[in-house]
Amino acid sequence: MTPLAAATATHTDATPTLLAIGLLIAAGYGVACWLWPFRACTRCHGAGKFRSPSGRAWRYCNRCSGKGAQLRLGRRLWNGLNRR
Ligand SMILES: [Zn+2]
Image (cartoon, rainbow, N blue to C red):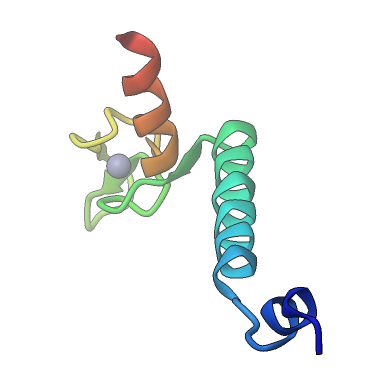
């Protein structure tokens, strides 16, 4: 056996493949956060307001100020990086 064949055939390294898969998932998440930057507000579950027990009155959600939407974590990070 030649030294070159021994060096290439003896061990298989899975680290580059795992790294590529990780980067692919991160890139996919980044694109998803760019396309759909919002998720439903955790406080009001996307409704933007809370109804009174009577059902005729309501108040707006404080956390999302009535929008019912929150910026996703990925998009918040992206905005933070761009602001610099
Ligand atoms: Zn809300």
